[in-house]
Image 1: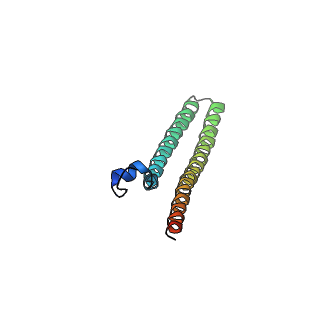
Image 2: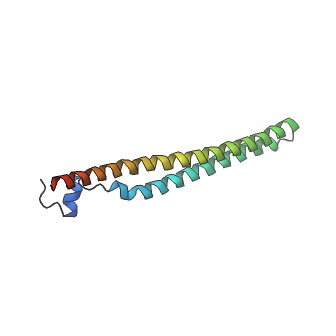
Image 3: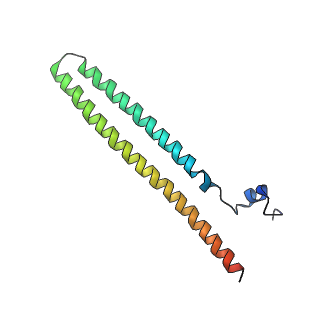
Length: 114
């Protein structure tokens, strides 16, 4: 339809070649950076919250601050690990979808040559 399908511009317009698979590593790394940054900021918020309780001098509030710190950091760590695992799974699903498409195109091309 667009002439020579070997030209990069024509391949881009015809969608015969999918280039999203080439960028999945960049997308994955960007997601990891965002996840790490959000976990760091959440951890910082937990520490600040705990320090506000601990700094009051009241024993019950100090205990509450220590509990807030421990539980908050454990929850933050668990959330970070979970988000990284699910982000990896999501990116793998994208790769699988593109690999299926690539294999179907190869099958179509091999059958058309018969």
